[in-house]
Image (tube, rainbow, N blue to C red; front, side):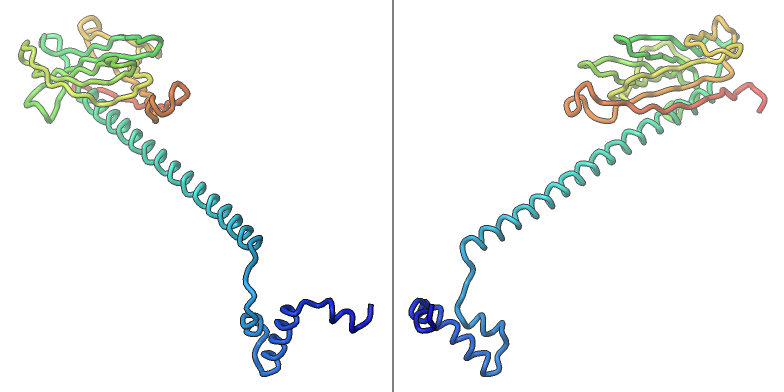
Length: 240
């Protein structure tokens, strides 16, 4: 094809645009300025590609933020449950170590019973001990109750010097998987104890608590509990 024929087939608007870019570059302007002055914009395909890439990046960032937020919520809830469980164990340990029992004082008691709720191991303890909530000796009871399929540890106390039924009860822990108390007897761990039969308090008491981290409505039956334990040694009346 000859040179004249190529000029005949050339688009007039394209030729005018190229000439305009050449004129701008010849006057000392940069290629970028020359391209902008040429009046050429983005095509529809280029805009759609840019929007698609931006949407993919935005979706990835949102997914990462959502997962990080959920992980932080789980960690906060787990730490709160662990703190509540440790506080419960420390309180019960102090009360067991401060247990008071004497054969000639019928108002004193140290009794542990073994319970079972649909295959989940629980214990109940009644102990005469010292409490900052009641002046003098207190009869303290820890028991597990079932409410709407959940196990809840409840604490109640009355003064040890009366037989009145006044009960200062409170719920301490919810979503309990198991709560067991074991007493060391002749190098064996047993789950029951009665001071009126043994005529003394045990040397060691092992406390084991398992609590579910997440709510049942959120995780269903697939949730896993965490377990903490502690050893309490009654000290009153013993040589330290």
